Amino acid sequence: MEKTWAISGVDLHLDLPRAGAGAGTGTGADTGAAAVGAGERGVRAALTDALREAVRSGRLAPGTRLPSSRTLAADLGLARNTVAEAYGELVAEGWLTARQGSGTRVASRTAPPRPAPAHRRATPPRTPPPPVHDLRCGPCDVSSFPRAAWLSAARRAITAVPHEAFGYGDGRGRPELREALAGYLARARGVRTTPERVVLCAGFSQGLALLGRVLRQRGVKTMGVESYGLWVHRGIAERAGLRTDPLTVDGHGARVAELDDEARRNVRSVLLTPAHQFPTGVPLHPDRRAAVADWAARTGGLIVEDDYDGEFRYDRQPVGALQGLAPEHVVYCGTASKSLAPGLRLAWLVLPEHLVADVLDLRRSGEWGMGVLDQLTLAEFINSGGYDRHVRAMRLHYRRRRDELVSALARHAPHIRVTGIAAGLHAVLELPPGTEQATIQAAAWRGLAIEGLSRFRHDAAGPSVPSPVPDGRDGLLVAYGTPAKHAFAGALETLIDVLPSAPALASAP
Image (cartoon, rainbow, N blue to C red):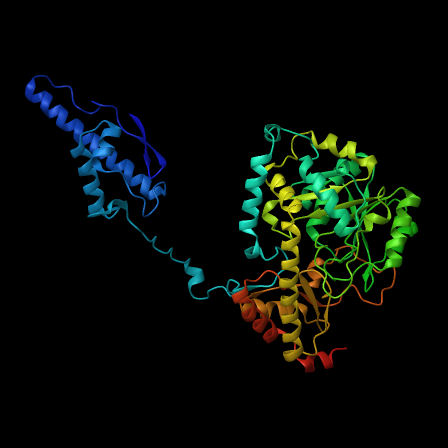
């Protein structure tokens, strides 16, 4: 007898014997009564075993309230006493608890610790403790997500949207958001586009994967990348079938003149972070912006512009999008991951006209879809001015965080040079040669998670062109936007404690 009943809104499946099973085969009134009694005992045992196994396996979590014996008996078609006796037995064994006014619940149980293997008991492994503070690059301050404003925008958007919006729709994404983005990007980032050339994606990674596949289909084999960058993006390009070729990064950004080297004559695409190079934090020099746009026009090449934190500029005029210089040779890639939250999985590609059809053909394969509700909400959020208000508030918030970091270093570690602080959500702390890994390990033992520059260096980076800033320089990336407000001071204190001292800096070669 298979039964399912609802416990606090959760369905639970039980396998119980069919009625009469195990009741015996005797005849006569006495034999029949004995058979019924034996059958009831068998069903009670089966019910007890099924409940015990549901608790043991975790299907019934600690604290779950069970139905009353009367309700469960009615659901299962059993006598009430049968259920009550099963409950009583499990209470006695410690699987359940029964209290007046609280009903019958699953008891809280603590699993006994597993004994360590004999060969490990004498010498426990030496590993750093779990991090207490996290200054690694990644998400923005997700605790500042504008929940109330977002919810209001969602309500307005869902109320006004036509029914057809909940169908499959246009492969480029909802027209409401594409139109809103075209206006916003033109106004705030200097992007030249129309809504028809905007394609929405489930995050920048999906957009880059789409572009990589399209480029490979067009015969492109190599993508130029910056010698410092996010390894995840290089991996996406490589999985799409593209080889990545690093361009040296110095104090003026990527050395785009290297694209004209004879060894790179087959490079016809390049991935850049021109407004705020990741991770070094420098903008691409104006001369180099013009040079790479000229390279693309001369060679028919394609520039993929990752504008990952374009809204956050503090001590200088905003650097407009490179796309504005060459709209037919640049794919502008933007995202809500830093301005709102990465969990939204909202990003956009502004495509040259000649790429739109190929990207849409690939989207129609069905593996690149995304939901419409957040698209509609973001469109309303932008059109109502909520997005601008949120960005301005977060720009002030992050600037204060950055100033707090810079002030703490100036007071307690003035020998450490801080760079890349005019924009973005992280700073670079320059370290004496050879001290990066030791500093990271010392931080880990103090409960601070932090990353070094070497983690972002391209494995194949080489001195094709001598650089005044060596590729092997040591440094730390400090993401000041991520920690919660109450934890930031403690994270800074720990950071300062593990930095190399001034004498070490002075004695470095």
